Amino acid sequence: MSGTPHRWRVLWAAFITYLLDSYDLIVLAIAMPVLLKVLDMSLPEGGLLGSATMLGAMAGGVLFGLIAENRGRRFALILALLWLGLGMGAVYVVSTWEQWMVLRLVTGIAIGGIWGPCAALIAAHWSPEYRGRAASFVYSSFAIGAVLASLVGRMVLHTDWHVLFLMGTVSIPIALLVYRLVPPDPAQPASPDGERQPGVGVGAIFRDGMARTTFLATLISVVNLAGYWGAAYWIPTFLTRERGLSLTTMAWFSFVMYLGMFLGFQFFGALSDRIGRRKAMIAAFLTVAFAVALYIVVRNPVFLFWWGIVVGFGLCGVGGVLGAYFAELFPERIRAYAGGFCWNMGRIGAVLAPFTIGAIGKNYGLQTGLAVTCIVYILGAALLLFLPETLRSGGVNET
Image (cartoon, rainbow, N blue to C red; front, side, top):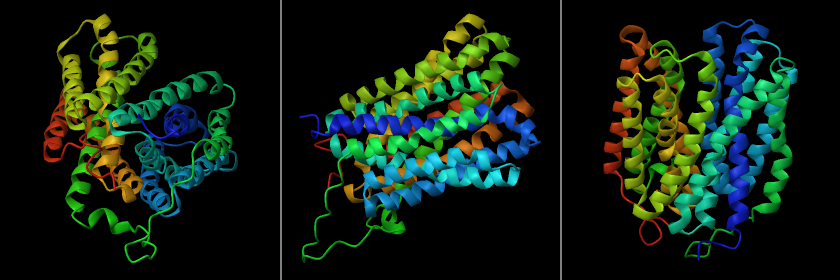
């Protein structure tokens, strides 16, 4: 049996939810050229809008993780979708940079609130031997959401940029769909003395021997997201400035890379169900380290363009498997909170990496900056050796 009778409905509900989450995360970058003019912002001010979103997401991982454990995973997902839709629609009532900072911080809370409950729901409804594929499929919607944001941006930015954000309000009716598709969480079992178990608090992931696991899992997430945003952010600039690819060619490069990402999610998810989560993630880290390293030594423009599929293939391999891995690494009662915390605290890497790689590139060339991302990925592979394999007889923490 591959899971509960509700597994396919939960899978598609989580897939659509995370697609919208990804769309709403990416859409700010798509609209940034227009927002810089409309709000008369400097480049650093524009960058701070992205940082505010990431900070909100970090807070959201904690807030919605606790909501999921104490009020239900379905409830947390529905609340995050409603919150997200309202935040996207609110672009019509903000007009200054300060208001945008507040809006993106608040919207970011909902963006960060979706990952953990999705991972916990997949773990609850899919058996371990299919869980890697299911989680990776859900999170592969990141690539589709990013492509969708790019396509909508191409269509509406030159007419009314508000529409780009307005599309995100579709998460409000999707919340109703999630309510219909996802079954309520089962009631928490009573403690041995017959009393109801106490609620999950902020410190739950640091007690009962969990502190080391939480720290290492968060560090893996930091490395994964630092590598992703460091490479994905600067590779297009590297290829145009230092390898001579034209802007026309690069207009299609993101689609090539996102295709690779989607395929990589599926491959490494399936691989994790066959050889184990840890081995699959080590393979993904080493794959992307090798793929990015080739960009440093190869100069053929045609090869560099199509090699983007391979780079994308490795870039997101770990991200999907982490959905299954974090769920199995922690006890069932704190899965949504622990997974959401570790993943979203990893956004520290997403905030720091683009700036750090850019600074290295300014002083030593982007070639050196990208070499640093390769080292980061190799470090990630090494760190995984300090965490256990969870694909055994149902994972290490099925209770």
